[in-house]
Amino acid sequence: MKNKGRPPVGHTSGSIAKKKPGPALANIGEALALHQKGRLDEARQMYLKIIERDPQHFDAQHLLGVIALQQGQVDTAIEKLLAAIAVRESSAPAHSNLGSALVQRGRLDEALNRYERAVQLQPDYFDAEYNRGILLQRMGRYDAAIESLSRAIALQPTHRGARLGLADARRRAGRFDEAVTGYLEVLATAPQDSHACFGLGTALRALKRHAEALGHLERATQFKPDYVEAWINRGNCLRDLGRSEEAVACYDTALELDPRSARALTNRGAALNDLQRLPASIRSIEQALALDPSDAEAHWNFALGLLQLGRFEEGWREHEWRWRHQGFGDFKSKRPFEQPLWLGEQPLQGRTILLHAEQGLGDTIQFCRYAALVKALGATVILEVQRPLLRLLAQVAGADRVIARGDALPPFDCHCPLLSLPLALRTRPDTIPAAPRYLDTSAPIVERWRDRLVPAARPRVGLVWSGNPKHANDRNRSVPLSEFVQMLPPGLDYVCLHKEIRPADRERLASEPQIRVVSDELQDFTDTAALCEQLDGVVSVDTSVAHLAAALGRPVEMLLPFNSDWRWLLDRSDSPWYPTMTLHRQTQARDWTAPMAALRAKLTALAQRPR
Image 1 (cartoon, rainbow, N blue to C red):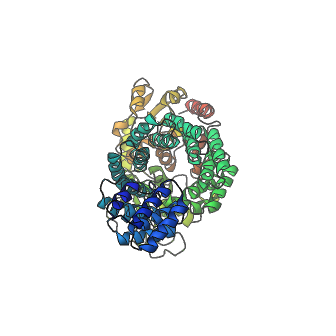
Image 2 (image 1 turned 60 degrees about the vertical axis):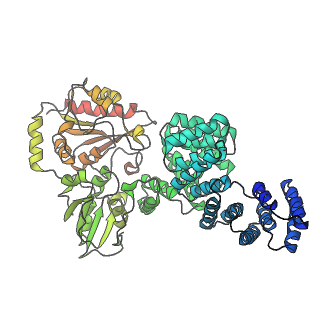
Image 3 (image 1 turned 180 degrees about the vertical axis):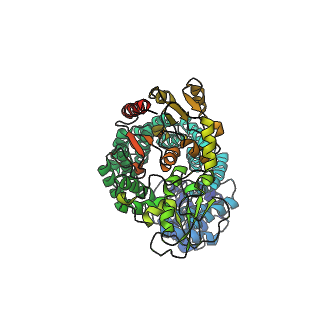
């Protein structure tokens, strides 16, 4: 904190000038001179002598508190500064210095009150306004911190600490573009400021400007080689760029500097997972949890690794930590139901349970199969799903009633999120409820699509080459359309199953007459399902349409990145979740050559099959 013990010379000298000449006045001036020269013990002895003669001497009490603060005697500092304020409550410096002492004791609310009182007493007091802004940022009150630090900068426009603090507050408030501007302003006058480089790199990473971010994070570690957080974020940025091997090296450097950095161990475990070095990944995360058992991100990564290894009993249990993971968005946040959570311990006979969607559309399609198992336990089952899935899942087996999220909820006795059902029902890889088909489509809609497409002389195949562009792993799991179409052999009728098509892909499709596009006619997933019923197979990357087609029992050829999602397990071409699905995995990161070749061979065989 600014002014964490520096004697507020201007304010005390002003008060001294108003005193009548005398021994005390002479002593306070001499004591203050010693104080300013750093001769703290001598100055303290003189302040004590002054207080012996005059216990109500404000300057001596105040500066005695400042010396105690400078020497790390925080409790003494608080005592002396309170004594000074008792003498002169109107002293802004005394309140501000007391605030700094209280911060060191972790009494943040009291400290904030002192800074605010100092600013109230003296609105142009930079130190108090600056300290207040930094404290508000520490307390997570970023908008208030931005206001306070902006006022501090108005008082001292060139103060680097205030400008850095303001950029930090904007970054933490999610105002990344403004943060970038602030860090660049600092670097314009202090190009080797490692903190500004770190902050700029972190803000640029949040804006997905990864290459730029990496350059600034590299500079942060060059200017300050022992900057642990910069090494960690440099590793994170390398992971974003698909350079996980280099990311591991950054985390290793961070751990050499700080062997007890749980964050470095957690992120190292995630990078090792990227590289499919699962045992090493698990060990790294276990070390992180030994250091910080409450780290939700570590538990989340631990769950993903365990599930990918097929260690379901431990993995489902760890998976419950997702509710505490700050990286989850609102649509995944824990629902504040008054009714209790059901995780399998209590009987359900005669009770009504709400099963509710929590993550993506594909997850809902995959896990709605559990409604039938819950129904078999004697419950009345209400299934709440995302609105785009309402028509499709209206008749799903086991659900007595299906409603859209956002609609009024009927009465229920307990609840369970869909992705907690495997834990509640103790699912193991060999007990996954994997019916060849567990969804049905509306007959009239199926008939309409049958008429729309008319019988084909050749096998018909649905295509999905990309997923949600906002998905964190989109760049790995989606295939460029230009690369995808080169894999398609002749002799088949192809149908685009995308409802939303990226602008660049729409242009390319105009020059690919062998792919029929019906996107404008797909109202929701019910139409997509009815369309899938007309197909001899579906080729898809890891998206909700792949789940949909497999849940309908259609043959699905799934293209998977090198480090695929946990649900596809490891080193297998089949899925225990979907009997009609075949998995085609990358053998090297971001190289679709091998899976595309295998898929082309299968499609060629399908084209040669008699109709």
